[in-house]
Length: 218
Image (cartoon, rainbow, N blue to C red):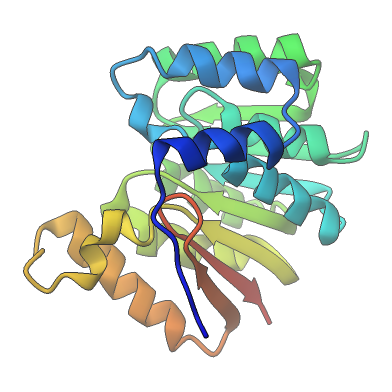
């Protein structure tokens, strides 16, 4: 019998207590970010732990991130990479990523992370033109209207067998509500259907956080 459970504040607190092993700087980043006006953009600790474990399971050494905010996701994966690992993080906000740089430095992984500021599509196009990569693992967590464009470019930069994770793909349940027709919801809904039928990848959409789509490049 299949069963699901309601996600309560008590359950989230339980997950943070026994479901993850946070580095002290991860907790500092998470705690300080919750006081910021855009705090809802930060992934939860269980999602960070999930991504870190994936990185280890696929023996990732090169990680690409689109949308870093205050640095929690990049920090989670950077801490899981081997000493020779490398992170390329793309973002448009100097204000938020200045916080990220501080956490990365305090955790001792700043030399691992190459932060590039500017529109991510432009950055990705330059990376493709320069034949950067291949990357083992990628994470997309930025402006939703451009998710499809990011997805297509990331597939070009991933190695065969590489994995891309896309955040917010359930969008608080709105993707399943036909009455929700705003641009962001429509873009995510369309991309879910596209990936579901994309024979270039193996895929699974998991109810982790706000919904994480996993796609493995064939």
